[in-house]
Length: 305
Image (cartoon, rainbow, N blue to C red; front, side, top):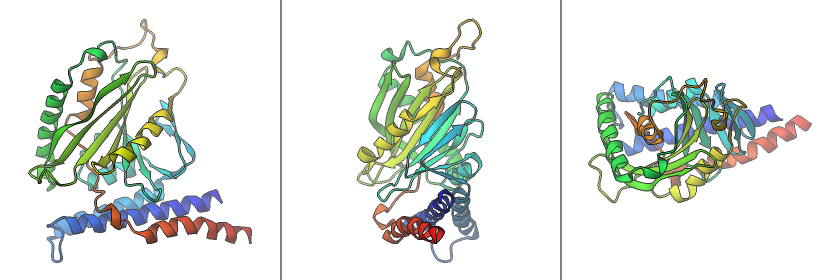
């Protein structure tokens, strides 16, 4: 039964990709009938990337190993896409992917889910957090804006819209007891009207002995109040292996990162502002959700027979 349920979820994710593609095509002026072959190829690649993600992923509930550092307890209704297929999806959506750091994606598959979480691991050594209480949110925001301006060169070269950071949704908040950090910024397509839907990068971090995991939830300004609960749940469900935890640090043997926690935030954001094409959520398709709910019961009945 588990295998059949996994097949159903994979089909669901593939169907989601097709719907996202249709929404994306409808929202972009360049994707019209008679569009240039390069745009048609981009559309086909997005569909193929989602299909591959659906075939390769793992449906929750499941314990998903995150490289050789940690385990993520994937909740029911979440779907993990591994590195190769996840990177393909991100590139097809117009994002820069750093292969050294990228670990995978988590996609919500519940009826109202329209979010995506990008998981990276940055192995830069033990990061001292003693200066976290002293950082300046205004200075950090300025640096984030400069990082996005730099990333726009790559986006423009690949034919994707440039983006801009507007301001904080949540300024950095560090929990020294759990060694977890949360912060979020608001962004939009450069030059878009102020009243348009705005993109959200909701960033969470889990510090470890040799570096840190970054779980970046992609949502929008109309949904983040609800969607951020998924980011907090995943952050709480990530546990480092014994010997890899922040408290396992040994001053006599371990390398200390050349920067503190504040710079780690900037480093994770430099040259990227991730964007998921999750627009037109209302037309996500009741038919897809009916298929997702019905299929496991049909398969189970068939298996029992």
